[in-house]
Image 1 (cartoon, rainbow, N blue to C red):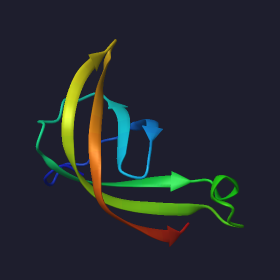
Image 2 (cartoon, rainbow, N blue to C red; image 1 turned 45 degrees about the vertical axis):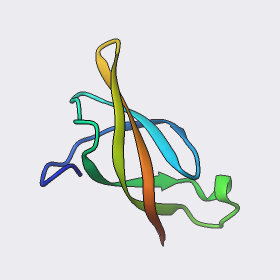
Image 3 (tube, rainbow, N blue to C red; image 1 turned 180 degrees about the vertical axis):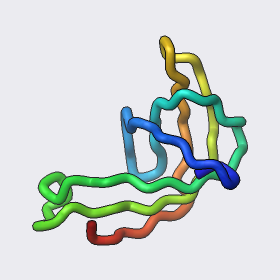
Length: 82
C-alpha cells in the first residue's frame, strides 16, 4: 500500500533488508510503503505458508519493459501464519 492506494506487484528478488518488485505504476523514491508477501512454508521450513507484513521505503524505480521495477528497503517486518 502506498498512501491509501493499493497496488498489485510481483516480487523479483528479496533479501533480509530489501525487495525488488515489478508493478504497473511508478512510486516516488523516498515514499513510505506497506506490503505483504506470501511465503511458501516449504521455503521457510514451516508446515504452513507464512504472510510477511512489511513497512519500508522506495529507494529507486526504473522502467522494465512494460512494467516498473521498484526497489525498496525493508524497515520492519512481522510474520503471520497464512
